[in-house]
Length: 364
Image (tube, rainbow, N blue to C red):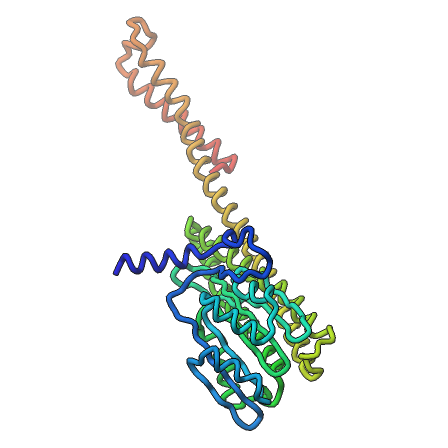
């Protein structure tokens, strides 16, 4: 069992890299990502305003039949390592080879590509890894057509479960609108998760502030750096998303209805709010890092001041003891009966005078 767990962790830590595509012609389908043990899973939702049909554990052949129906179809695919299945789906739906290549390359930057018969959108969802206290990113690909929407996920997750529940229970206008509104609902779900992550950042920042006030240590510095890396990861996803939403709302796209534009404008405002909150968090963390470094320097200065005071006091005392410790027979006061106590008293007076002097200078 330990060997199996180690191999599984190695698969996650060492995914296929972009270097494997070096020298291949554009549009060559090569999966770039972590190879999970889960098989490819296809779920199909076929719906209209009155009813909905769900096909769990569907096959690629079931997907081919959906284009002939007048209803709206949502094909949800999780698991991208079976390249041949993705290729068949792309060929049947008329998806460009470059789009297939981007779907399989899970290290894409969020973007939107507009074609004649579909729109391709790349998003990134984020998960908070509590075990390692970091933000993990995962790619989501959306193909929006005239009466269908195809989503591609690296692995099965519950991120879109609220949208699925609304679709099944017919809450809101999701069943009354086209696939463009469904795409908006998924994008809005992604942005809502960004707010949840920022709330977790708020809680972590409060804990770090308490640690800075009490006893800042190396663990505080590690938490600050971890949060800064998480914000950088989240920022890489939100900045391009603003451009995606703005383009879908402003450009004349056949697959995006005019009634959906108002929702896209609202989504744009949410994305801007996320970006502003991230900027605020980044500035707060930078300030906390400065406070941490200042507190460490102040503590080091206090230690050095105490050591310097002790060294300054003992320098004349060391001189006196070294003077009377020389091995000469004829030293003045060497034969005094009270010479030892006289020297001790003189050393005590010197130390006392130095302490009074330092106290008046407010050095301690």
